[in-house]
Length: 323
Image (cartoon, rainbow, N blue to C red; front, side, top):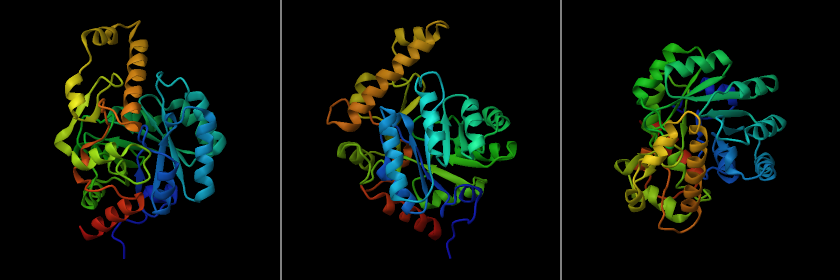
């Protein structure tokens, strides 16, 4: 008999076997990974920004729907840096995706658009104040982005954030960050979370579209090699501390900081920083380059090989059952 708690609020909401979301990862998550995640009994979520055009976005969702019956989600950046939000949201509603994860802003527009169509909306939060705000707006769950997360990590460890949100909110809490082994699942569920969002271990998957160098970096580097940088999006973001990252540094230069503090210019400064940063990540992810800026979280500590998504999921579940 499986030790994984069944059902949880997450498995019931999405109709999945195991309460695990393969987290949305910029440039990494794709249809092939999501299909394999669904086959393995979990679900996956893809950033809409991973597709340059609406046609490519639709083609990816068509590919998933043609291959598997299970649920999948889309991640939407909901702040002003995402000028394609309205188009992406309209496409998600048209396709009636199973759930949306909102990040980096207010989810109000997304919740209003999705509610009439039965699309679940899970909102990234890093503190109690924002969790209560999205609950009032009608979110179906909060994703507690803790300090162990990859990408835009929160300031609080899971041990603090999950119980805090569980006590404050009436809606379910999903924990994001720090899960690299099955025993970590046990710890997260004991805190009161109904599921986990796991990202970085899946970068080193056969199905991931990034270079072998990026995947191998997730094997070769560990938690001690993860640093925070503000040079990619203007907000703190976790990356592997490669020689190139050490060369360019992790803080914005004086001009970038000055522009970011100017009320009239900070919106445009942040958009320019975001654009330049995403281009740098894209170059490193898909081509062999000395400019290696690879986004990942500390859970790469537990990545020991490049494996299929199915095998990564099976190992997590087996380790959980044995813990």
